[in-house]
Length: 319
Image 1: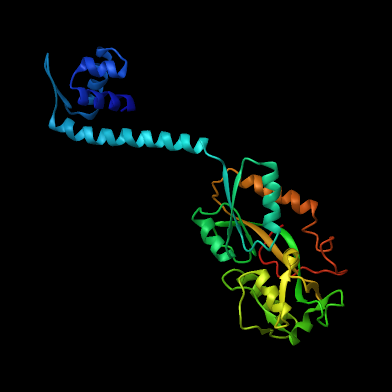
Image 2 (image 1 turned 135 degrees about the vertical axis):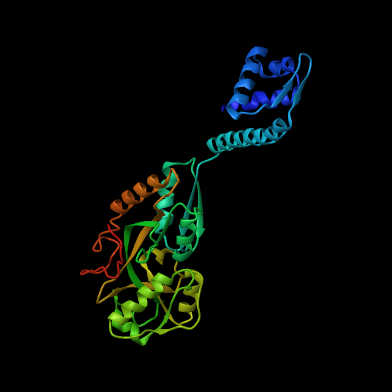
């Protein structure tokens, strides 16, 4: 069965006249008649009652007409959807945990510079929510700690981010070059909003546990690095964050890296194994180039201020 046979049949059913139907389809009448006959033979039914001067649909033909129109309508919509997709501006949907964490924003800025026609949608969401949106196709790429990725999500380690503490600039640790992890035992520690940064929160808690103490957690929560800076500025707590977010710290606060041990938070790109975005490979390749240029995967690179770094808690990431 061919689409043109369906189209010829529908036209003939509407005109009920071979001459007029053939004219509408821009073919000779004999060709129209032959194609309709072939359709009837293939179906094994008579669709039309014909006489010398009259054409009528049979009851079977009336039923088939409804289905044939639906098939042709579906084909028409499919063609239009394909044309619209081809003509539309290419888009990429990227997950970011918080605009303050600059790894993904830097990657996306590089991508936009190289592909100015690409429309990029940044979606703020915690890693668990990014997993859900990647899985159902609402996101093309995400970022986070990849220690517990679902089986349908692929990951690649892209940055070892020095971990440190945001403190007031008159804090007793402000004059030093780094803060020993064990020193946090005497501090009230602010964690991030659990829905946004559960992996980072757990990472910090486990880090303290490895140093021999359970941290005293500030009872309030914040939804942004700026809000955390307000609490730190008021001397109500200290805040443990990666170096990638220090560009947004409040005046009157300073960031000092953790030492003994020097610690890095491992950021990974996340994407669905069966990802459909044609730009997915482009953004992954661009991220690799950026990581190499900025030495993101070298714990002793320029981003770290300590002399004897060790990366811990890297989960299941594979460089």
